[in-house]
Image 1 (tube, rainbow, N blue to C red):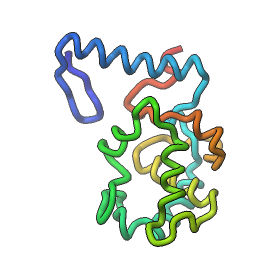
Image 2 (cartoon, one colour):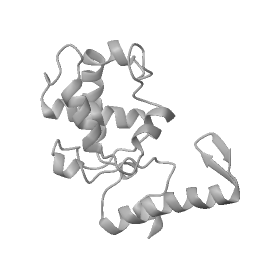
Image 3 (cartoon, one colour):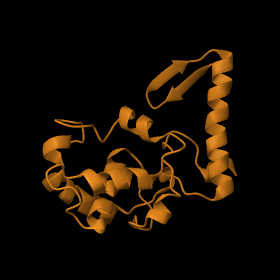
Length: 160
């Protein structure tokens, strides 16, 4: 069986293919049953991502690169980034928390919670996650419900 992930095509043995498909469907089904939003359904607005871009350019780009490619620090875009955050146990709140508590490196926690949410929205946008109708709110309880599910995988609405 050949599985397509973006531009990559991975050949899996039949048993591995079954396990991979089962894992993806289980994650999507669990999300649907729990009513938990997934990032691929849009959890930020275009306007919020634009504010995030301005903040990113002034506070993050020196270390993480102008195109989020990594530069002097960890990449914030691309397949490695998405793969590292698309684990079922990780939520958007986990990512937001790390950004808020550790960035910018020379002054961690120096921005407002809304500013960090705007930067997270920009990072999502740059990873091809679509915008939605509501802004990402810096509320840990709400963000704990949001899972990183790649736009390449089905969303809740696709499996109903």
